[in-house]
Length: 302
Image 1 (cartoon, rainbow, N blue to C red):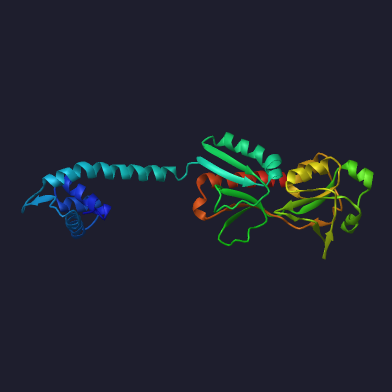
Image 2: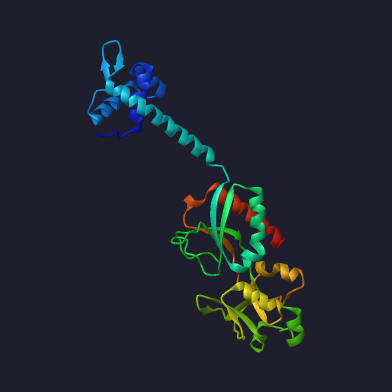
């Protein structure tokens, strides 16, 4: 014996409170025939009579009294839950688990997230700073910030910064000691600091100027699987690096690094917020994305 349809229970409660099917149907904005069918279906499912019917009235049976005592609070609880969910659709709250590249996270995004939480104190953050690409399907990650649009078509990729070229740069001390390359082709004579992802070393640096594209096979005495280490080596004057512009913009503005071959642009690596599916685009995610877009655009400048 089962109650298979909550509307049938709603018809039963309304009928008991209104004293008849017609009044219950008007209250629920359904036809008397639909109300009658729902009540009959409920009684058949429970295999018991819920009302004693006469030509002029309906009164509850003992079984009906017991069902009303349990069923009415149940319906009220469901309505309250629905109201809370609807009210919560626009609330910026809850926990967000975010994965992002180490250098970008520590030196660019982390201060922004502090400001975001100050603005939205009901949001809790769990951060994973790693240059390894997080598996957002298997790992406890809600959002991943990634350079480059993911190839998986099933993922949701929300752009944060679409124009983000890699640039060639070095500390003034290195350039004073070793000289400044005039073109990327001269990199073969320089110490190039390379980044490694999943054992694959990024030692082929691509550049474009006007309609000319070149790829340079570079070498150096240091390779790291952590992008922050590569940046620190460059700041220490140990070699040239090939970095995303957003990662080194503050160092360039502060004179700690200088652009090399500024007429040549590296390959573009747009920054995306990646989610497993659209159901994860909660109010907190939506507001965070708007906040990050605002910060990124302010950093990137006109």
